[in-house]
Length: 496
Image (tube, rainbow, N blue to C red; front, top):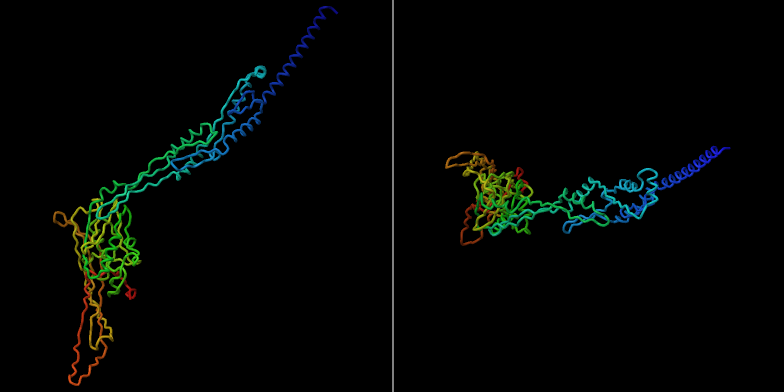
């Protein structure tokens, strides 16, 4: 074999050996890099947790365990003043951008070709590659959650209140309320949650002022009298006078726009505990004792004051019999649980009712916005459209009266139908006439007591017996200032 042939085989052997080494080296490198590709490079930290040498699954679990320790029992605290509420992080519907950060962390040392990755693996130093996780929030859920807490931060505004004492107005000023400014509070929460949630996050709730509906300024234009009316009474019945004073004091009140005034709401309960006393009332055409007698004079005085305004009178019933303190058609009655007197504040402004008794007069003043007062001068015309004759007298035997004696216990009264008109005058000229109401005052039969007691003359032998002359007495039954209240009742037995 020649030298040339030998050299050829030497070359082949060397090539084989070198190839073997190369294949082995590449195989070794591939194996090492393959193992390295299964884990994160040394010195990789996520939220200060070292995940170098860990697989993705191992790194995920280690980070989750670490994060759980960090945020366990941590909360978002929303407060304002003395109000404070904790919302646990797990209720926020948020999660970390774990996959995104793990991908970035894995890229360290795992980029380039096989040899570049092997070279990085061999030459890994103590250099640290740190990454931070970030919350990805369910903003809609956080918005809904904070919205559910809105009522906790709500402070109801308090309206100003007007009262009248000693003929002067006293105004209690309003107080502004507060309500949660949801948009600004949610934005504040988002910004706070972007910080490191390793401890409780506290944010002060953003609020906005809630103005009161009625302020001191609301009452500026209602402190002038737009209507006033008075009725008179005498001192013949102290109990009735007391009832007038008690009832008058009870209807001093403010009425807001749209509110309905119900006389019964303010007068009741009509009993001794409320200050009322027993006085004469009309029951089935007769004067009898009844608790609260006289309160209808308050109703009638209020009614007449309201007739001088544009306010809407929604419920009114006249007495069954005429009363002396107001003209026909201008009275209003009240009966517990049966007949009420009502009117509505149909304006855009509050109004105030003032009532009191002084110098044997009942006063009712309406304080309101000037628009409540009609633009014209107002007068009234009560027109009797029909007079109904009283029924035949009722005769009632009375054994306490001498035989042949007749006493008219109840005077006969004619019934009347009355129309009340409101007349509007401008510069002394009638410009408008409108019907206000129709009133019916029923007729009443006279009741006459007839004596049935036989006369027994006293025996005197020296003086001849002279029979007594029959006498007729007539009590004072005028329906004057002390005549109170009775409704029109179809069935008279109700009051018998």
